[in-house]
Amino acid sequence: MKLLLALLRRDIILAARQGGGVGTAVGFFLTVLVLLPIGIGPDQATLQRLAPGVLWITLLLSVLLSADRIFQQDFEDGSLEVMAMAPASLELVALTKAVAHWLSTSLPLSIAAPFLGILLNLRTEIIWPLTLAMVLGSFALSLLAGIGASLTLNLRRGGLLISILVLPLYVPILVFGMSATAGNPELIMPSLLILAAITLTSLVLAPIAAAAALRAYLR
Amino acid sequence: MQLTASNLACERGGRTVFSNQNFSLNSGELLQLTGPNGSGKSSLLRLLANLGEPSHGKISLEGGAPDLTPGQQAHCIAHSDASKSALTVTENLVFWRDFLGGGDLMRALQAVNLAPLADYPAALLSAGQRRRLALARLALVPRPIWLLDEPGVGLDDSAQKLLAALMNGHLREGGLIVAATHVPLGLDPDKNLHLGAAP
Image (cartoon, rainbow over all chains, first blue to last red; front, side, top):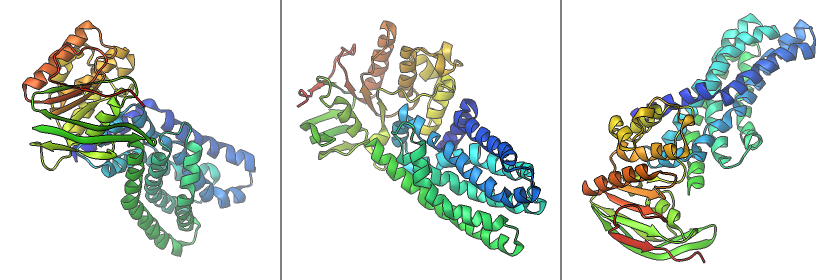
């Protein structure tokens, strides 16, 4: 447990210091949200209708943009080999690194997104459901991004391939995330529960898949 | 403690790198691996570290911790140095100490003479200093088996002597070392294994 906390702390420090992946993701998020109202025009009703969907899609793409950071650098500098020789299973290493990605990138974005949604004239009564759905869903996004990152480990500029591999897995999160925030109060609770179920399933299965891919690359 | 490889063969990318290799190594012994480029020295070390599966044969360890694989009781210092440029020397070592299961930070810094640079970012280190940072893992976390792949690359004379002293100390404490090298290590190997030319 202590060794996983050490890994978590190191990955978060690295994400904060290097900036590259996380900074790009945040910058991309802000750019889209600022440019969109200018591109669509000042019609407030249109913006309001589009806002939740735009926020979700931007969140998905921002998470994907920083996904290749999860394993690639550790693979290139040999850290991953040393980690494979530690008394911790590679599944737990993969889980911890996905959690670090969530804490350093997806979680801050998903907390900030609903409030940045004010730029898009987001209806105030769906700010809370949207925040909850995004916090839940973003954890699954990071876990699934870990699968894509491990599968494209030794590919330079594997970012596009990660998107193609992982986006199909993101569709259910997008569907239920949207239904929680579409404005129908009866749908909020069931949608959040299904999102939680998706997240819990990913929590169990994604590290296993990612560790299998990592083993194949280390061989 | 005895590390034994019997009838070991390795295949990479459909090509047999080496086959039918046997050796056994006891506590306090140094095995020196030699052979031309591509003869499979690094591949053999990776097999010993459990980072790959031998295509044939078996690696066994007697007298080690029964619930750990040989790889989990070994240090493998390969060509990449597994350190992060964005962290300082101390932060790098503290991470590996906590991740690999505890050790003495000051002893490790002194063993490779990096104590004066402890608070430097690893990005500012020279190639030889980065190599020493990687070697510091050996002194940091006690593990019985050391697998060294060209450990002396990039080291100056005094650092070579530090490395030899470090290895000597480990052997005297009953450790095992397998070192692949093209240059003399500065101490006499107990056993030699020469891998033939690449086919």
